[in-house]
Image (cartoon, chains in turn purple, cyan):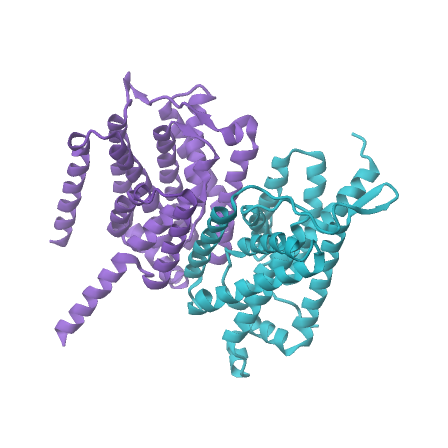
Length: 317
Length: 295
């Protein structure tokens, strides 16, 4: 019964999202909705890696940025089209995730965090310093609108459907994984890896799977996002994005699929509401993160779950 | 390609000083990890704090090096005290991920708060010593570099003495080695943890203050260095202080040599590739885990 209610609510949300461009003509609002779609995918991918599997991965930022560069370079430098760019983003980042993940995941979780962070910072440095390829801090401006069979996704409203379609596909895949046997296994690994191993579950294989799926989905989202911005520069690897994804996961509730999706959609609007100064906004973001971790470690979803359990306990007595 | 030996010696000297200052940062990071089992992601911002404290104290004390440095170290140590009392002391022993998220949040607040208050423009810091130096034959090294390297060496010697000869330091090693056993002999983990955080941030402040007249001071400087410090701590073995120092000095030399002959991108990529390589071969770092072997 609960399951049907969930599917119904999701269908309603998709319907409402699809109707958005008919409700508002404002390119500004639809632009926020495009960001909301792509940020939510990135946050939900981080949720698969951190919330379900327990791997705090900063590499998500690197995948997001490298995905953006892959898509942009394919069109601007390698002479390919947008779709080939996304394919490259998915392929390269999948391979990178395996190459970095394999040595890093064999370590304890402490070292994994550091390696993933170093990887993200390295991607940022390379974007800035490898000027022959990335054109350095100036970036690659003027990315054209993607086309499909002669139809151009020009204009924010049209582009929005592209982003929404991708978000549905990616979130659908993540939901399928999270609610399948794999999702249960990932949670088991998070809670007690040694116990999971004693049941014949290979921790490394599953962790690598979650890490790679998260990387591919995030990279493609990053690739689409730079075409929404129509420019890619080293700012795509700014810690601001990682911070945003993290806040979405933490506030929504790590390990709760719908909690993070709802937080992703709602909190995409937050940066737009806080438009005073970029630096002050970041200070506020930092404060929100610290406060959320100290006060609400399991996010809103965790808080609701705890309340439900308490009410059940009270009813039983 | 012929290499001018003088140029090589010059690069080596500069690399050595840089490596010793990296080591101050890496040692602090490693010490906090050894005692508290958490990773302080705001460590780079404490370096930045030390550098800015030096920058702003110098004009106050008439460009005198020593008092400004001392003030910078004390200010940073106070910052470390607040970090522990306000945030880290609230965490339990198994709150590893939470500790990271909290220190990241703090790092971003400090970085952008500084950028907002003093602007992101890099500053050139002048001291009484100026940019003069000593010349041995054709090799030149500035006083600020020489003093920076000397201070780092003195700091390591005192840290070693502290950890091996005093109850204060022995308690830290005891907690790092075996928490339960340390509790049983009456060591208070909270006090020891606070001491470790204050000591680490003071070392970091020393590095920042010593770096200020050598490099440009800017809010982002901690971010550049922390990335290297993380790699060093991994390569040296998490929580292993001599390992971190050895890795840091090696990196300083390595970077200076590479920077002298190749493009800057290789300099940045080298440390990350080295880290991945070390992890593949020796997942516990080159030197394994032990804060300081009993001596």
